[in-house]
Length: 88
Image (cartoon, rainbow, N blue to C red):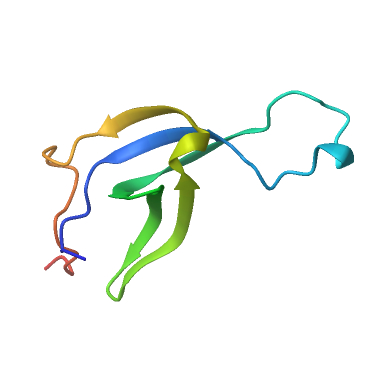
């Protein structure tokens, strides 16, 4: 993967692994995930943390389960770093 982190988004999606038999609620089980987003074919990869060795706390969301995607910070925004470095 490149050094660029991409933009930060809030992704709302239906969790297909949720067991509706275990819940009194019979409606959709919508999950919100926030992080750096990368397009990855059938899945949207959302990275919640970045460390010097790369990403961790990664969620792979099937694109067909996505309800909405809301950009929070664009990749071009000054608050988004393109390479993790120790501040001097």
